[in-house]
Length: 293
View (cartoon, rainbow, N blue to C red):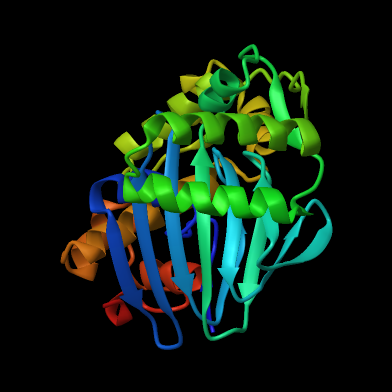
């Protein structure tokens, strides 16, 4: 069975990567994974279609809100200490930064996903930028909202001509979803902050091939080493170097798909030992770089 970690191409890198690719299909020894990405009428809203078989997603998180609709099959996931089985008729609601996994043993699972940025949520729901929408449950059974959001996803991805109806229906039902199943709170304040996290993320991408140290990362945020380690983990749920590893493996996967040789990819993304790269890649994706096609 193939396994994907927080570096998961499907759910973590999809917004950034597939804005350029649109469609992708790749095959492992045990799984076929097909992804299509579509822009929407709204800035900050991306539409994703995923089909896969017999697959595990190891623990990962997102920087956006995800509203997921399984249209075929079932998938189980763990989040906030609960194990949930999700299927047609249910909405999977995932806040940014919530660590979760996912698995399915079925031959085919199809799902539609709305990926919505935090700033878009603030704009759509007319909330101040410091407030944070939190959903009370990660899986809800609401056949009416499920049907509406499924229809909206299909129409928006297809470029349905009646944009006024689409805009009105999406905003009104998003408001209904947030009112019925969510609440707004003031987030905990960390000295690291989202702006510094974004700065660190960009710094890691820019210096991906270098040997980065805790001190160097801490200096970028005017924090001590201990402050960075504690606050980074509190803000993201993972360590700075787990985050960096995720970036390196995400980038490696993209480079491999573009046809670059595995040995060259390893050096480009900061792996100075080919065996280390192969082992890390296999732990993340369940296959060796040479087996990806």
